[in-house]
Structures are given as structure tokens and as C-alpha cells.
Image (cartoon, rainbow, N blue to C red):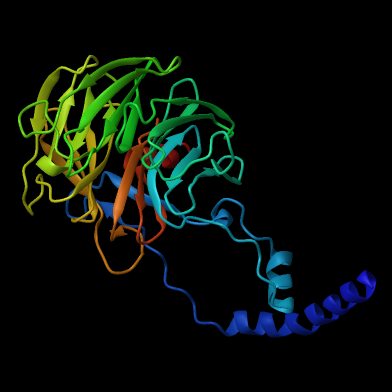
Length: 359
């Protein structure tokens, strides 16, 4: 029976191939794609769009034979991908994305053309993963806002341990691991009906609670619905204090250093800040969901530039509900958008120039 099916499929492909080739030859030429750059001309560009991640086929493309088989038989390949991405973390060519609908971590391995999902099975089962970070030791830390704990995995998605729990957290939405991998900073968003709006510090290996920073309020060192956190190379801990429309900076022990940002609709202000990351120069990248962009500030809180804009289409550079951002070792910027179900990647212009000079 299988031989008959294969022969039949072969005949169908042979009959369809001339039609497909004719259609391809008569199709109008596609316009050349111009990847967006930021800032836009006439300013000197700093970042250029590189690629988007949505599906498993973005890292493991369909072969020509599989495409023909799909066309000839009408079968649908097993396409998997993002449904509602939130947080993103990049590490040595791998991109890890939390998905609050899939209740899983999606891993795109760009170097080895692999796609993987994990976090659905016990004991490391996730309920609503949001914030994510990867330690220098190669451990994946995930904040589970509904399970009210932090789950830790290895790079392949094997569960290692839990940190925190309901004795500490109300709504742990974001986290960041110190550069030496010794501490994990966890932001508890709390809620409008309680005062549990804190920055927690835990031992990243033992899970021992070290200290609790802040309370609900608007003064320096206080929080109002904080969402995400990032740790810079110098140890500074940056917290998105959403309800106060600002970013607060703390030292490694949790002592307040500075704050920047006010409510408004102009560059350098915030209306709905959410995700945050830092680069090797100490610059701070802040997602604003309402603006549909990422604003980049220097360590003094001064605006440097903006990546992206709010847009109705999902083309590169357009965002409707951006949530997460990360910056990798080479300076690439990763932006996760919940509405358009994608992660856009931007390459520093300096990397493009290096590639050109080496040719």
C-alpha cells in the first residue's frame, strides 16, 4: 500500500512541477526589502533590523521536497510558534522567550537551527511565565506570576529547582541574575489592593532569602506596580516602576541610587513602561507598550535614541504590544511583541561594518 501511495505522490509532483515552474517564471519580481534602521536618516544609524522569530520554521526552514509534498497533498506541516510572548533572553546564539498562553519557554537556537519548548511538565511546570534571565553559569531563571515562584532550568530545559514561593510573592513578574550568578533579584508587582510591592534578593543557588527592598509608595526606593528588573555590568539594579512612570536604580544591596522618567507622551518620558535590559556600556533599554518602542538611556538617565514605533502592521520595526527586551553579548537587541506574536532582532551597525571590512 505504501508503495502505491508513493508512486501516486510521485506522479502528482511530476504533473504539478511544470505548472509551479511556469507560475514562478511569470510572477512579478518582488521589491527589494530595505531593513529599517534606527535612528532613521538623516541621523547616523546605530541599529539595523536583522530578522524576526515567530515559528519553528524561522530556525529550521522547510525543505524544497517538504514544500512540494505540502502543495501536492494538502497536508499541513507541524508548525509551532509564539502565541503571546512576554519576556526574552538571549544567550550565546539561543533566544529564550516566555509565552503566557502556551505556558512554556520557547527556545530558538540560531546556531544549530533548532526549536524547542519546555516548562510544561512537572516538577518544573509553568502556569504563567513572564520575566526571564540567564545567568553567567548558563541557568535559565523564569518568574511565574501565577504559580508565585521562580523556576530554574538548564539551557536544554531540564528543571533544576524552585526559588521563593507563596510565602514571599504575590505577583512575581520580573527577575534578573547578578553578573557573577550569585544573586537573583525578583520584582513583585503586588496589586492595587495590597502593599506588597517589593524587590526581593535571593541567593541564586540555595534560594535563601537575603533581603526585601521597598514598599508601596512614590518616594525614592518605593514602588507602585513595578514590573521588570535588569542588572548592569557594574552591579546596578534597574527596576521599571510602572505605576510611578519611572526607572529606579539600586546598588547590589538594594540601596537607592537614582531615578529617571516622568509621565508624558514625549521621548524620554513614559506612559506604560514594561520591559528593561542593559548593555555592556551601561545603557538602559526600556520598553514602553503605549509608545510601541524601546527607549535607550545612558547611565545618568538621559535619552540617547529610540528603536521602533507603534504601527498597525507587523512589519519589522512596528509594535502594538511590546513587552520584553534583551541585549546580548554582541549588542544585538531583541524585542518581544505580544500582539504581533514575534521577536524582532536588531544588529548594531558596528557589526555590519565589521562583516563588510572582513570580506
